[in-house]
Image 1 (cartoon, rainbow, N blue to C red):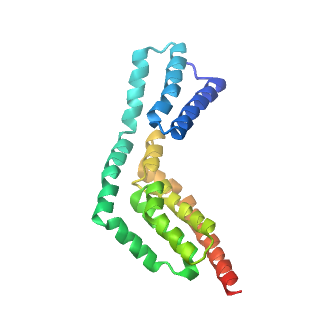
Image 2: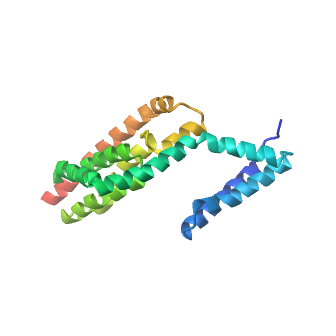
Length: 216
């Protein structure tokens, strides 16, 4: 049996990998380039544990195979979102959301709209780019605190990113820990509902405070 990596080796691997990823993001290079130094270090550490290159590559292929559903979801979403934009589906969804958002409950309804969008799209960035900008623009026109509105949108967007069946992060976590998606969703249900209720209460209070400030 292969010896486990030491804590120092694991920390070094994490540091090199994160440094590569941050470098890729800052200099606008593909993330695969940023992950490559960490992968090379992992191969070197595995070789020191007397693992052959063939065995290492085999384990790597098995790891990629475990995440194939995530790759498939990302591939399909890359077609779905542009088609929704071109067909006007996103614009219509935004119009419906803005129709139901009222100034007196702007923050709560912004949170709920972002949550529904993220559950449908399964992406935080896609949700914020689709509905975040129109709602922020509306908040500016109504002279509402933009920072709090942005917080409500981000909070709602991350609900779907965490729990939506279309979320690549949700699927990746399921396949990484080898837990069925249904079982994972059940395990996360209580904390998700608690977080949603807490956010609704928080932004409800903020709506009240903002309305009182506007009256005075």
